[in-house]
Image 1: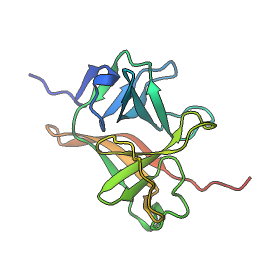
Image 2: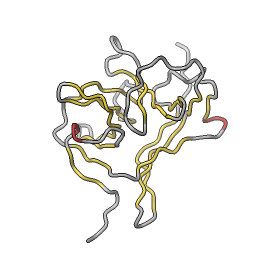
Image 3: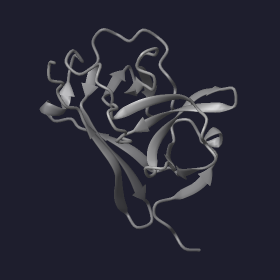
Length: 175
């Protein structure tokens, strides 16, 4: 049997395991998403990871995503690598905490901040990057915030890595 990099399969979005990374076909090209545990009415919510949608934030929480005929499901060996240099950290979360795409540490868990799909009526969400759970409590006032990350897939056979996407927070300029 031949080994293939990356390890992928095709499933419906509702069958994908929460916390997994999937690639979803779209008319403007396939996009990466983090699968959440938020499942209602036969449809699942997801977090778009750097989809490059025009005039939209880099990370978006798509509640009850209905278009899921099939997705490309990345197997295990996916990892987020967090930037830990001084300019990649906001130790108290005061400067970047509300920036979509940053990863915040709450206890032993890491959550990605996702802008709402509908910016008028919804709020930002925090989604666990390990298990896809949506944070439902009031977050602490002071949070270590990681301003950059990369998403990698590892091939255990060939011992090589492939970067899927990356993020770096930018400072918002006053209007």
